[in-house]
Amino acid sequence: MDDRALAISEMSERFDVTLRTLRFYEEKGLLNPVRKGARRFYGSRDISRMRVILQAKKIGLTLAEIRRVIKLVEGKTDRQEQFRELQEICKAQQELLAEQKQMLDEQLAEVDEILVVFEELVN
Image (tube, rainbow, N blue to C red; front, side):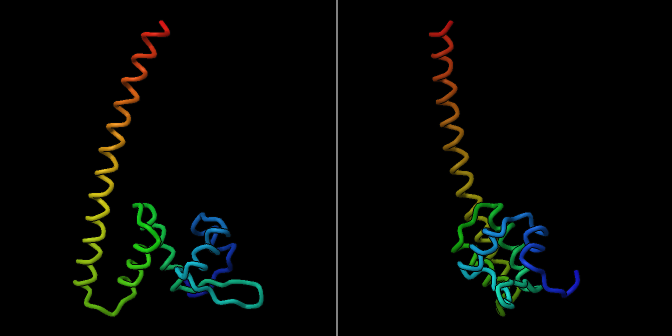
């Protein structure tokens, strides 16, 4: 990838997100585009951050957790320590998602039972 800064529309296209999303991430301090007048330009740091943000969102991390991940990724701490902390974040998320999946499976089973009753009542 080249080091050319991306305008907000280019950033939006590259990552398939809305302009509003980019402005929201800027407002939350996750992205820091350079402003030239009313225009925003995203450099390589913001592009890298956007990749991290989207991957973290994909696995369901909160904005606070995403901030922590960015801090770890960009931090000056030992790489092994960074990897351990990132691994812990992912394991915690995995546990949370497994709990949510269990709840959804239970809810789905309940809905299935209700539908069976309705099927019997309708026929």
